[in-house]
Image (cartoon, rainbow, N blue to C red; front, side):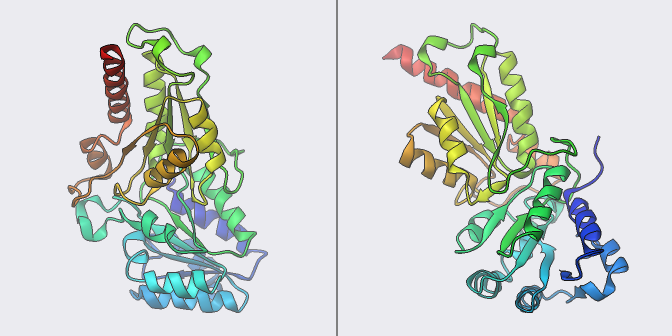
Length: 336
């Protein structure tokens, strides 16, 4: 079981790259411990800035340093970075097109017990609405490392959300990664699906279900796909780490061979991955899309996994929702 959180993977890459690249700077808002960036501050104090609990200053200073030629990585809890400093992210970073990577740590419901004030269930929508701002939710430590390396090689603004806790590995060290392209984890080859009396194969189009997930929801999406395959429902799974720009090509290719698209995210039901997938599919390749997300309400408090379990954002919950929908669709077809 992996015990390295994605935030530490970011630190490891920056530590290695900063040995040769003195333009890399890390800025924190009294959050170096939470961001796993203490080793960087210890190793490169001249390339590290602590602003204290002042998120607006944090982002503006990062943008100013970027305008001076620095590669600024700006760390703060996602719940605060995406709200308290929203104007600075919009104007100083995105509108000014500065080389700043905003890293929202402990994203989603990582601070589960602390409640709505510390949850960041609206950050994908908020950051994606800003022109020039890219939005990424890497799914494991290996993909996180590849993303950071890619961000170090360009000069465009970005928002990266990572959780607080370690997540089970999805990839290996030689992680398949192409910037701004989704990764097809399960390809949805219907020919290899096991036969099942539960599914009327003749009533469904080629390819049964495509699950598009991002961040910490990718692992349960994979497990749900494996569970469904055992019941004869073959499933494609897309790792949509690049929420903006959305890889429409991958989404539409999957939609073209699917009867159902399922978007899964650790986010409110508005403006996030589900909304973007629905918009792309409805405009270019109309298919049924269902959306699994956090509710439009204050989320219950508790440890992350307990909250995920409560709202069905786990493998069992995803598989159950898909199975219920397929059965309902089959019943509707039979009644016509």
